Length: 431
Image (cartoon, rainbow, N blue to C red; front, side):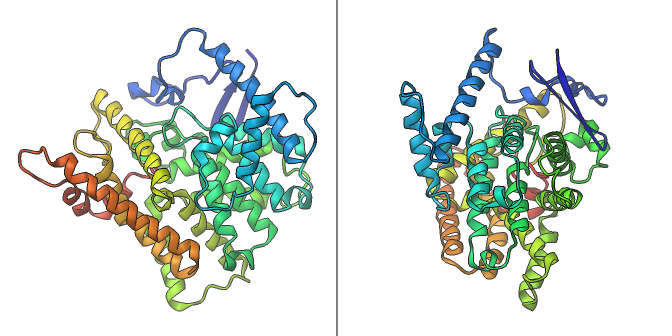
């Protein structure tokens, strides 16, 4: 079997033609299980060939869509379904800056390739491909590898989430204060960080990796374990594809990309929020200053990463269900292996509503309130409006979920009484 091994600062990742090899590190019995099959369903013996067929169709649609996006005529009139789907996807991309953009629909129209199509389109739309003289073949390969290195078995931390965060980042980059100040290099970094910010996410959080003695926890000394891994994984793919080999500032790109991705560590939420609030109180953010622009990019990425509660209800509800499914799956694994169940991961003690109400109250609302102070625009008010309505919708559901309790105890009360540290202790699970 022909394999490709990427080694970067001790972070080892193996990609094979027949799938991924299990990672067997540490002493805990759970570590004999491949993270990449955590959320997978039972598949038939012919599932591998089926995946290869789907990947082939996916590649064909890649080629067709890229031709359509460039305005080139399609030479084969037989692919009526593909033309129809790609035509609809192209129409959606014309409104890629809309906050109501339905990433789930776009992913279906692109046959599960939303991250590749959306990121490529945005890089082209901003003129970054031409400006930085990016090789089209290398770029396409990089984006495909990025998409493949997300675990689509994960209910939440998958390529669709990365595409959604990238689309949100695009919305923020268009906000007046940023659009007037950011350089093309800033925009390139912001989009790449959004696309790769959860690369190779295992579907479990940092505390889980630490308590199971996973080798990544030891490698990064229990500090921003997942975020460091996402960053190193992204750098590995950049170096493998040599996407920026023609740029003299390649090392700088890698470092600044890391700085952005590391900012998504939700356990450091209060640190970044306090610094942001201080800047706003003192009114001393100067976007002509490169370090200040970079900090604003960090805050923009943090907002994009957890903006699901600020989307319209139809979209927000789907994300809430997916992230809670991932939480509860981790809790089930912890129960099975007799580990302490992580906060919010016990399906018997929590509901989707209680998890979301706590997350909105302690994490999302404070961040987006400060972002609205920084960028007081229609988009910011729209996001806060959706956030309020979505929280009210979950609150209305929660009494029904707990109404059968013999003691009559209200789940929302239990959820909102928890200190913010309980929500943040999820490490970077929701982000």
